[in-house]
Amino acid sequence: MNRRQLIRGRVLRGLALNRQPGFHFPGNFLDVSFDRIGRNGSRLSVDPGPWCADADGQADLGSLAILADLALASCIRARLSRETRLATVSMHLQFTGAPRSGRLSAAGEFQGFFKRGAGKLGMSRVSVSGRAGQVCYGTGSFMALQPPRGITLHPVPLRHRKSAEPHRLDEKGLSAEEKKILGQADAALDAGGVFIRNFWTGAGKHVLRNGLHAGNRVGHAQGGIMVALAAASAGTALPANWRLSGISAWFISPGEGATLRAASKLIHHGRLTAVVRTQITGKNRRRVLEAVTTHVASGAA
Image 1 (cartoon, rainbow, N blue to C red):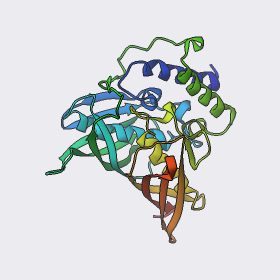
Image 2: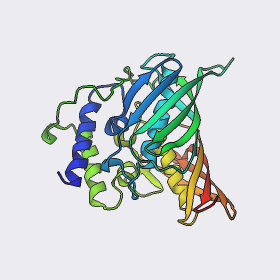
Image 3: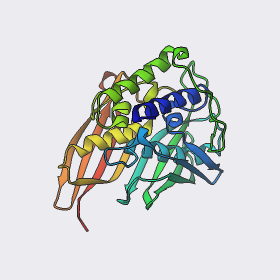
């Protein structure tokens, strides 16, 4: 099986899994394994492959951020109910510089609910490790919300590696929305370069073409993918020899609109460290996300 067949097969598999309600396509496409879910902590993992490999062979940042986001939320949802909608309020990730290679395993730990708040704001922390050890660690906060009007949320299926394989889909039997996702994958493959980057964004490194392929359970752009979009935009504000060392992201409004656009501004450029501020805007130029990234010059001690 060649690379194109392998990636298209992975997309079709994700579409098959997506026919069971309760999860979103990005998670099904990556085949996130819910290895352990408890009231105090969670452990999730993914096995990366060519479908989510960056230019250097590592798992792309979007896949890592999706995994971290889900691990942070899962231990909070375990104290509510599996169908609860959790809107990401903030996510902060500090990178160690270790490569994003091998099976990525994310351990989430529940930190409590904000006391005396009008809503139910859950807090958690996460550590993600790969073949070479800890890749990143961080924190997140999530607000429990009612789903948008007209949308019924189902419990998250909590698949794991011993779960049964989905029924193989015939392309002729795909729905219009499913054909659109497969078409997005074909366009990403035809564009050349890094498939997953083309697939998530669909329109360039500073623009995310919104849709089910990059959406969450209520149809808004998935938080981890937006974090990766912000980081990619921030990286273009610096020379190629600078590496992302951390990102702090605040989610201002839902990721709505046909396209989401990222714009970055260099705040500090020192000899060893740099800071970049990034905004993502969506429908009617409404601000969706604010992010501040820190960067380290390659070779710095």
